Amino acid sequence: MSAIGIIIGREFRERVMKKSFIISTILTPLLMVGIMVGTSFIMATNVGEAKRIAVVDRSGVIAPSLASTEVIVYEPTDRTPEELRAESDEQMYGFLVIGEDIVDNPSNVSLYSYSTSTMEVESAIARDIEEVIEQHRLKAYDIENLPQIMEEVEADVTLRSYKLGEENEEDKESSSVLAFGLAYIFGFMMYIFVIIYGSQVMQGVIEEKSSKVLEVMVATVRPYQLMMGKILGIASVAVLQFVIWIVIIIVGGSVVMQFLMPTEMVESAAAISAGTADMAAMEGAGVDIELAAMLANATDIGFLVRFFGSFLLYFLGGYLLYAAMFAAVGSAVDNVQDAQQFQTPITMPIIIGFLVMMFAMKEPHAQLSMWCSMIPFTSPIVMMARLPFDVPMWELALSLAILAASFVFMVWAAAKIYRIGIFMHGRKPSYKELWQWIRMRD
Image 1 (cartoon, rainbow, N blue to C red):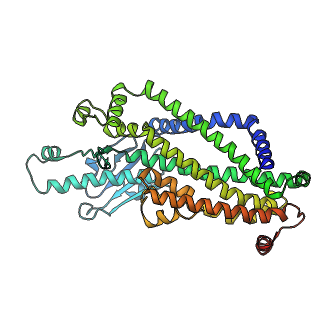
Image 2: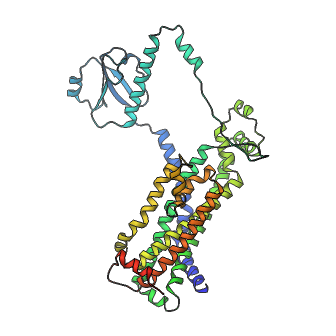
């Protein structure tokens, strides 16, 4: 254990003392926030130039009622489609041909654009025509004061969601937006962390093997100790970086709430957390209930400790599992190019886990989500998507137990490969040879 501790310290100091670690640790969370804010700002402020579209309305019903917007400008015309096709006006986006029976046959409409049209434009046009057709059909019923009636019966439903409390506990306001956001962000972070830090282990082993440093080191420590020290050393770097990011996020979030959030919103979130919120009064004051509930959940210490604690456990388990496999690959080859053959079986489960994570965010308790959160190769990513949706404790405990047992087995198997592979140079072993190395007795 003392030898492993020395190697852990060496790997930790070697990476933490680099400028790249300090810069990435500080800039990464700021960059992520900047990207999200910048993307939202760009989408909100840059709507692009309005698309001018000529409208050939053979029905005589649709064109007069089509209202132009910032996105699309409708220009009714008497010209024929053949004339419009021949003109090819650069200032025009295209032209719309509406059939005579459009009211009875809503599919009788075609868009001809001078360049490939976008889904946004097509959806906007379809939506505008649908509204005109619906209004025309309603008028056919000859109902007096129909627009006023439609306005009076229109309803805007605001659904409040509550999580049922345990016995002797009050129901709590919940936020599906927060749960969905946390599931995506932390599932994606798990995906990136496992790949990045697992690859670092493989590259570190390949570099040491190529530079002959390894032959000197194994004269004083066993290959198993060297592998474990490298894996745990890089893991400690990842944990330190993660803890720093969490501190930055929590502190930064608190500052943003104090300076940017209205006082009424902060007080409403605190009232929801304490269970003393007067929803009717909050609605009367114009407070966004969904946003207040999201802030209340985001500032719940118990929820944060449980969520971040689970993330840390799954990160360590997933990292250690994949790092052992990456270390085995690194010891079996001489360069990164040769490692591609063996990396595919390792990265495929990670990619599958990420794809299942997207499904699990929508259906966290489905059979596919449950089983993939038990399989150790996908559970670190999939379980992150399920955690905000109250996973049963027995599922969480069983998943972690399977992950821990799989890590122990994988370290044992990887150590078998590592023991022989670090001394081999000049050729790539086959999968059959790797299996023989694992089965070989000490």
